[in-house]
Amino acid sequence: MDNLLLNKVDRVATITINRPDARNAMSREMWPALLKLLEDVQADIDVACVVVTGTDPAFCAGGDVKAMTERAEGSNPMSAEEETTLLRGYMECARLLHEMPKPTIAAINGACAGAGFALALSCDLRIADSQAKFTTAFARVAGSGDFGGSWFLSKIVGTAKARELYYFAETFTGAEAAAMGIVNVAVDREHFTTTVESWSERLANGPTVALALMKENFNLAEQGSLSQALDQEARNMATAFRSEDHVEAARAFVEKRRPVFKGK
Image 1 (tube, rainbow, N blue to C red):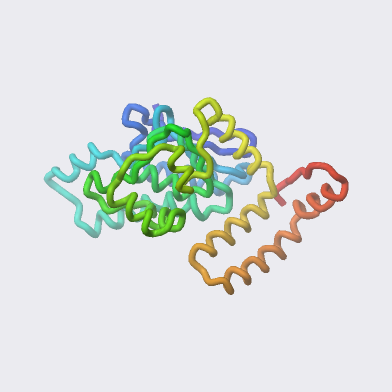
Image 2 (tube, one colour):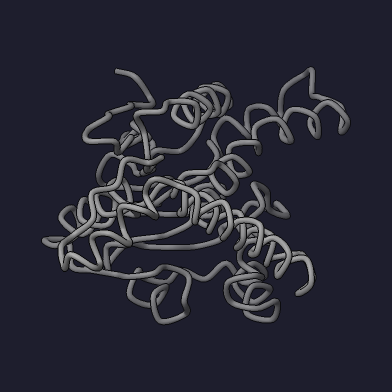
């Protein structure tokens, strides 16, 4: 059974972490494979939206703690420099989900912890099962955190709350994550799949040129100045106005009908 599955339907690419016996914990071999899948869907012109999820009953429990223990107790441990280089390469998965010019959705159907939590935070949008269990987890294994989780979470909930969630590593539900603004929406299990499908289909059939430019604007807003944001918004709006999608949307508005976007 493959540990990572890719399914493409109607311009939506769904990547499923498929290791349910380990609550979809990521082995070291899986990170490069995930990065390759993300690079492929980013380059695929027939993909307009990317969804990351896990095989029930979990989204992703983070890194493989059993493998971490075996590695720490092994007779030939890596140097700090080697470990840093290796981890930095794996963490490109989070950067790519956050920066690729396509909307990304984390569909959190169950346990979401550690690096899995950080991976979910790197996506543009998060939909959760209201009973899914979340935790930063790192303090429980005496780790400081990776995959950009501290950066993403600070942007979402503020630095004080982010520190609390990291320092104490308490568990909270999808409904509580929604209340904190960590996920966009938490829904009952019976509505989870239809909500993910609805959101991803709307994005995949939306004005993809404009959505890519919006994402670029928001990414700059996370770290740039207001002046930089204003300049980039002006450039990107001028670009959007020259797209075929904009012409179609304006025409549809006048004709009182729904626009049909082509991503051009």
